[in-house]
Image: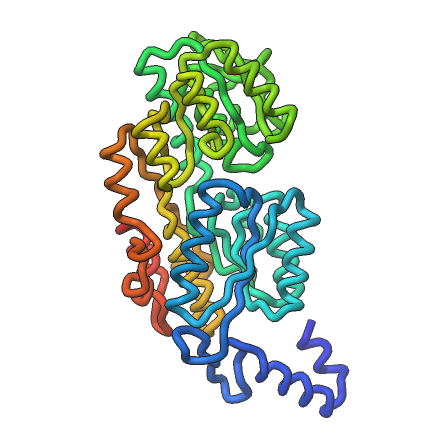
Length: 390
């Protein structure tokens, strides 16, 4: 659009626009150089962070890492949203942050990522996904968008397999009756995790037993219809969301006396105390945090698939590179898409192996580690190798 405008505007107005661009952080100057914005090499970078579930263990761990560690090591300011409930609130947050001078948006909210990308393009701010990837069709559509930096996190297949493995764990321990908490469906990562749980229990859903067949129906149903579940393991209760109604549904699920309570996210945040009291073994997909450590050592949390609090370090690094002028692309010239696996703990010792490695004072993705890819010369292989090594 700017190129078209420049054809129409006067030379004087063009000059004003160029001066305006020079004043912006990370924009190209008229000599083709880049204004550096990291580590004290320029003015402070502002990055907006979109968050859906601000009360979750994941969200709190991520916020602490960015605000308490990264912001102190780099010349950057993060602005986190309150809970975002829908696509309209995501779009409004991007517009607000763009108006406040943010040069990039990191997304941990997934109501409508296509709209997020298009809004970032409209306001000419960079965009990256830190949790829950775009589905394959969306990625294909937007992978060449100049403002889409990329996504680093668990792929939808990885989400599915994580749910599958968790369910298999409880089946192998002899669970015959389970309750499932679907968290915030239609969030895609929760859909695929739930599909994996059903498959891991050995159940079919609407006759389907494969990843896309189950996930597609859950998307269509906007949840799980128990009348469509069939298998040797009985799903005695299913519910999703949170609030007064959900509390009633949890109580009903608890009274059904399941052998295990399987959550695809935020179960430890919302229900750990009640599950411990009811002595119901449970599993979740969450984070390595002190409260989850306590639940695993002294409560009924038996299985957790989790990411490090600092796992969102690499996506920050590539965002900073983009703002500084080094927009890293994959071998085909597209936005990055790098899978980041979950780690699994089934006892306190395993949990501490991960938890003690990654803390706000000494995170796994510390400054020394990230500096390997916070660089004018960093490339796709550098980023991919760093992510896969951790």
